[in-house]
Length: 339
Image 1 (tube, rainbow, N blue to C red):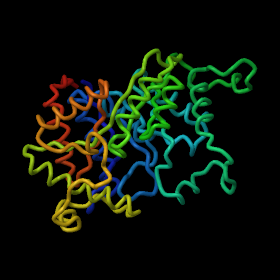
Image 2 (image 1 turned 90 degrees about the vertical axis):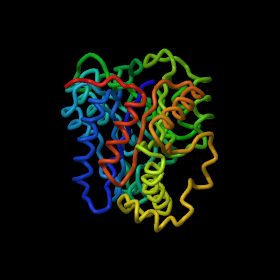
Image 3 (image 1 turned 135 degrees about the vertical axis):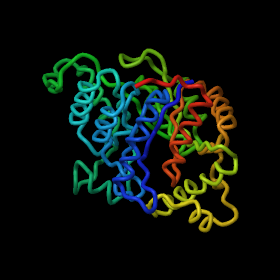
Image 4 (image 1 turned 180 degrees about the vertical axis):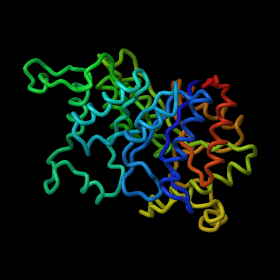
């Protein structure tokens, strides 16, 4: 089983976004040493609790601070951007760190409706249709130098022009993304930590309907659950309260930094279990001792037929977050790397 990291660069209450970005760099170094496969950085806009609106910038620093781990976007929210510009950015990263760059592409806005409007490519006019599928096809053509004959963009050279290409992954948390990844023959990363309800159906749909492509001959999928490991069950559940309150606040449009455990316990009250709308086969967050969490994750991966899990951990205490990733790596017997 491969393990990877998805980092939203959480800003803890009482700390600054600069602290959160430094924490990302420190965690990336640790993940590289522990033997994690990938380190992906999320894109969020105008959310006080999450510090990275530009994953491609943070990726450059993370790749420079690590030696072996693959570094990627989790993901670039393509509707905001020109496919050519995204292709140029990631070809630049590929030139700097060949064989280590992943381009995770998403469709979600990564912020509020106002943020989305401010980021729009066509400010002041509403697109008559969702052009994300066309954008995605165009991005792949730029990356792979694969425009149809006589297409005007086929004459363009995307710099830096060098062999190879970043790995492209389609991100999602719905059947739509599973279907798109299958039809285009793309790698697929499912954000279980965002919505656990459609996880099984989305993965089954992707594997059943996958069409081989120039990009990929056989389906390849990652599932991304939330995880908190601690030395005791009680401590893991205690740490989880911050993530639960953060999630509840986000649903209510409250984007404040990650609350302390003490604040979360007071605000959530005595009943701080998972929300009632979690109807999927597995919870969004797995919390407990390392052995318990490992067994639960292996069970989920086995049912879904995936060989890689990408873990997100949101807690207030950065040291507890580092400790959680370390305990999980030890439970899975990851091969530590020497630097």
